[in-house]
Every structure is written in structure tokens, then in C-alpha cells.
Length: 261
Figure: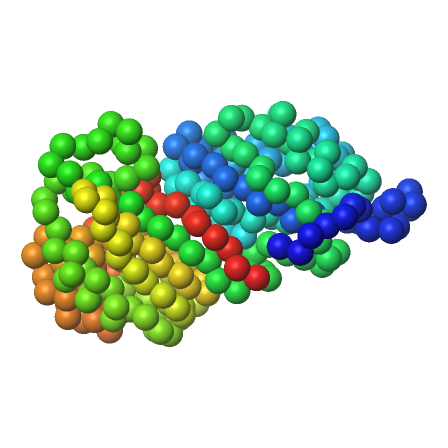
């Protein structure tokens, strides 16, 4: 992020104008029905809007770069906030954290160009999915990992996932509710990292379909368990048929790591 030294000149001079702020957020998604505001359920965006409007006024708007699902976490969510308030970015940071629940934190607030839009201007997002591959589930990871007690063939998983790099139609890994989405995504990187009984799958792409990463992980685990060989991942991708892929991995293992602009 470019360093900010205070509000824009018009704001500093007291002129009423719409101002954009760029927020960097981290949250534990366990207690929330996802990012996006819902009428009858607690959401991260809902809490952030409530806190921001208390602080900055009722016309304040907040847009997130990624609409994370229920139970999904974030270490690097980005949100754009528009307001007419002249409150300095450093004061906004402290005041929001004083109001928000402890499982939602604003890590950074900076002034941004007036037209900045966190979702539309993002060029790439990186997610990590954590698997607890120990024989006995770690109680400390139960909110942040999928426990798979069967020893996984990590090399096979890595080979299968490598077939997803590049631009493809990812319909086979798309949840039914997302069928209206354009299905072509560009996966720029996919890595499998193992540290003792922990396995992490890290995916970077320009955009994602609904449940895409979780469906990819479920398919990778099917390879890791020996149910299918690595080449099967390519066959699933080419089929464009969700019924051919693996199960949807549980939400709690998924974390948004970074949004790139």
C-alpha cells in the first residue's frame, strides 16, 4: 500500500466531499454467516458497516474485495469505505477497533483515490486451505482446519493440482448457486506445503467461482487418499461437471490471505 500522510486537501480544508478509505482486515469467521450483509444473521460486513456508520455517519458505505462464505476466515481482506467524514485515517483505525467484536480487526486504514473499489479493482486473490492430517485432531485447529486422519499422498495431490494452473473453465468446481457466474478463471499459482501433520493448499487466481477453492481441495484430498490418481484432476476439469469432482471441503479450513491490486 502507498503511504498516506493524512486526509486529502479538500477534506483537510473542511470542504464536504466524498472520500474513500482503504481498509485491511483480519477476522475469525467462525461466528459469522459470511462477509456479506444478511437480514437475519451476523456477518463481518454487517458489523463493519454498523461500526463505521456510528463513527462516520449514516451514509457510509463498505464494500469487500471477497465475499467470504460462512465460517471462512481472513488475514488480508480489503474493504473500500466511502464517507464524507474528515476524521483522519489513524483515528478511524482506532475507533473502529474499539467498536468491533474482538474476532474482527482492522489492521490498517489509508486514504485511497476517490473511485477506489475493493472488489472491482482487485487483480488477484490468494487463499490458503489448512488440513490437519494427524491421526488425532488437534483441538487448537478445530476452528481453522479440516481434520483428515488418513495419511495423504502429498506428492500426488501436488501433481493433480498442478493441472489447474492457467486459464480454464472451472465449472466442475463451482457450486450450484453460482451457475450464473462466468466460469473461466486464471489460476496463476497453486502450492501444497507440508509441515509434519499439517498440509496447506495455497491458490492464487484472478477470480473464483462459488465454493471453487473448497471443491478443489475436496478433489485434491480424494487424490491424496488414493481414491483417484493425479490425472483424474485434469479429467474433472475438462468435464465441466460438478458431479465428477470431490466433496466440498469444510469452510473452517479456508482463509483469505491477500488481495492484490
